[in-house]
Length: 517
Image 1 (tube, rainbow, N blue to C red):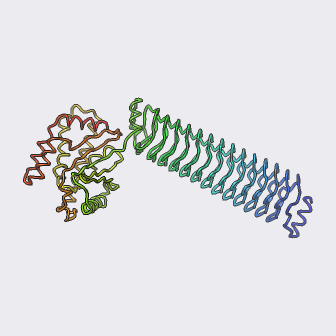
Image 2 (cartoon, rainbow, N blue to C red):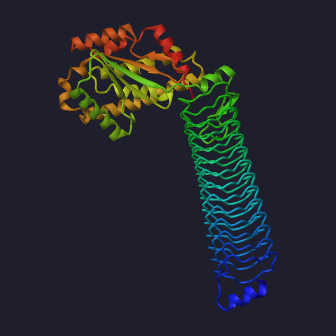
Image 3 (cartoon, rainbow, N blue to C red):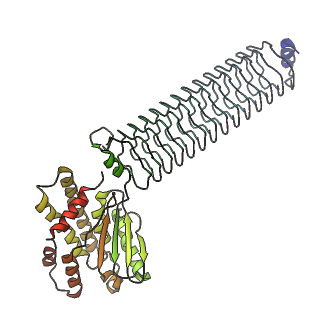
């Protein structure tokens, strides 16, 4: 069957040409809309600018054919062979190409929006500037494919193979790369904002200058990846592996990185504002300086020696621990939860409920905070339910005030500023506590519960693991004991009596000095 015969029969209404053999034919610019060419052999055929929209080409062979600017919208090419085929500027939007073979096919500037290419083989295919918006590319093989400047926005590439693929400057916004293979891929200057790269393998990939704003890289493998100057603002790197990764001058502002492995990574010049450095693996980090400014504009640079870098990237989560000299029984537990809930409900403070450890003699309440500067105000609020709270809270305020009086001239600017912030935050907490007391927020039964009349001990632990027992003063312990026994003891007298321990003050200064940024 030749060109004339096909066109003649098609004009008469015949559309079923299943299994025909028509190699090297010239069918350029013909209109074969909805034709059935399933299992046809059309190798080396010229279909330039032809209209085969809604055609059935399932299982057809079109190897080394010329399909430049062809219209294959809504066509079915499942299992078709299009190896080395010229599909430059072809329209394959909404087409089906499930398990089709397009090895080394030319698809430059082709439109494959909403196409289904699940399981297709596009090894070494040329897709430069191609449009694949919302295309289904699950399990597709794009090994060494060229996708430079292509658009794959919101496409599905779950478990796809993109080893050594070139996606430089590609639009990959919202793409699903879940468990995809991207080893040694070139993603430099690509836009991966909001992309899902969970579990993806990006070993030795080039992401220089890439935009990963809001991307999900949970559990991704990024060993030896190049992220120099990349934007990872607000992305998720939890449990990701970045051994030997280059993050020089990358934007990591507000990145979630719990459980991330940064062993031997380079982070010099990275922007780290709002990043929690707790529960990460950070051995042999290379980092000479970091940018801790809010907007990453270089207004707050921290220079780091190798030893300081080690401490900076191996931080512990700051924690407040309140030890109560009594076990926590159900009634007390209920009352405590009600008070803390009220604080959170009214002021959105304290955050998550405390971790509680109870034995027959004592109870330990622990709350983790995100920053060292939150330790003192958190401790101030945590002790509100207890009988000794007013005296202890006054002690906090007097203690910080005394530090200012005794050490203000000898403190460096950074430490002095930190104490100033603590003063401000504690006074803010005092106003909140005063308001709570004025509103009588404590449950009535609290007065009859022994738990809230017990001695308390407050220990705070900063981000380098250094602990400081706020109430570890002999004067304080004696004063609190007397207060609990003698109801009429003057609180102001007691406060003034236990703020005179020089070594205690020096320990506090050192503790605050070691706060992390």
